[in-house]
Length: 230
Image (cartoon, rainbow, N blue to C red; front, top):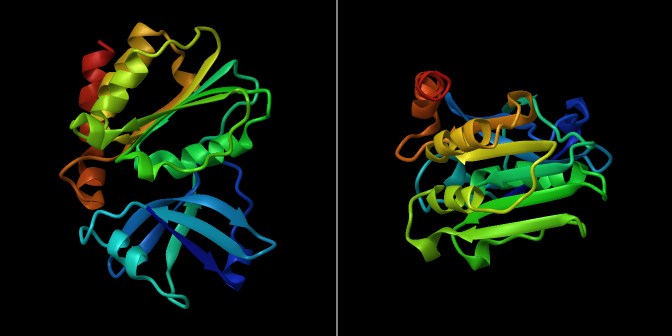
């Protein structure tokens, strides 16, 4: 993962962040790629963006890997829709590499007394990051390469077999779309978590670029809801 710090007077035009999943759409020629804002500092006129690098694959990853000071980006946004409720008894935060910035931002926004159960999937131990945790935060790191499974599979198992309490549970679950279907069923159909207390969505899907995933996401969600909600 590579962090890019974007800065300059244009930061003044961005509103204060009211959500922890705020994102921008970076423009690369005639296409865009979506990235979560890790943090925004209006006083310093800086914005942090974290990029998952997959070698030479894609547009944004190689650009971030090779970017030099002075490089410019254009973007649309920000958008966003979710922030943790400070009064929830338990905050369940689940994601792979792509959701790590939003989950870290959510942890920063939580009051110190809030209990958080965090499940994060990364390639290996070297990919772990320092997170803004308190004594009430439990972080479960799932190292994908150690299990030899596909994206999200070991993470899904870890959540489904974890022992965390019932009660007023709020959940943020994002990452590979292939883990969204089983975890949605687990939270709604097995744990009975109210739907208004859950933010769950696929940021991406194995074998698809962002354009392909966004064009098929509606069909994926409709099929999942028809199967699980009937």
